[in-house]
Amino acid sequence: MTEGRSCPLAYRYSPASLCEEPRQISEDVLYIIGGLYGNPWALDEIEQMAMAEERRGHRVKLVFNGDFNWFNASDSLFRSINNRVLDHTVSLGNVDFELANPSPGAGCGCAYPDFVDQGVVERSNLIMERLQGLAEEHPDIQKRLSLLPKHRCLMFGGLKILVVHGDLESLAGWGLSYESFRAGNDHKLSEWFLASGADVIASTHTCLPVLWSGLVDGHSRVVVNNGSAGMGNLNSDPRGLIARIGLSSPVAEPAAGIERHGLHVSLLPVTYSLAAWLPEFDRLWPAGSAASLSYRNRILRGTSLNPEDVVFPSVV
Ligand SMILES: [Fe+2]
Image (cartoon, rainbow, N blue to C red; front, side, top):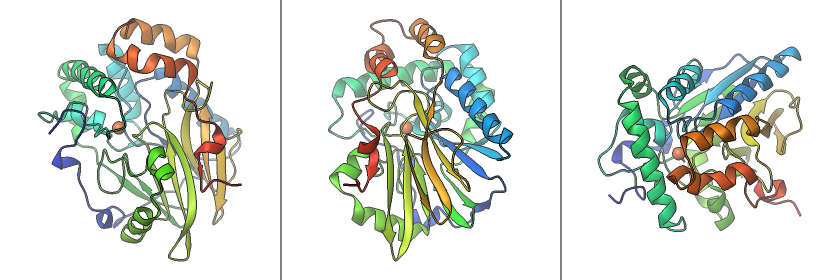
């Protein structure tokens, strides 16, 4: 196994097994939060967003689909992020999995494809090494992480919402990445929707957002990948994004959204305080550190994508 390029066998699962026992949800809104990356200010803001919905009479369920750890490289921040997140409905990302169960030779467990620069891969392995050293000092949290599932299936508004971290074959799969949608993945999507029986698939892991809708077997289906909740996703935009799935439209303006079967699926911005987070990030990951080199520019400026770029199929 090449560190950071491939994934441990324990990450694998079968698409047909993922939605066999959906759990009934009674709330009116799901916030699906992937890639918080240890940003406490983004978590504060997400809680505020949920409270704003609740003031409008919507009951909100927070669902974390992994990689809530990454930049939280201090004892106090490691504990507080995990303790806060673990109060909610949570499934694992590769980062959280490797903190609870370090796999020899897996590095960050990211399964980075060839188009990702080797420098990025090596720096992610270094970030993981530092966090694993920290996690060893907190065996109670490691234990709680080790008990989490790798995916969840929720019955919401009469539809099956499958929540994964990567794709329908692996915890760290890239089959639902922005790059996969750009390259064309219709055949694989059909196969996965038919095998799992899901109506909506929510993913994260690959760090760029996607909102796809289409027909499979005569039924409307949706894929939403929130990119990152704790880091900028769009052009000159430092806001995080979460996936919101609701029986009503969102309170705030989404970056992108669609409505299918009475279900509103949106990418909702997380306008956290960059002025508060950046000094703490810089203290934890000073100039020249692995995370600073890989992520500081993105935290400040987002990516090169515009909101219309992340909607598939694109609307002409
Ligand atoms: Fe991940």
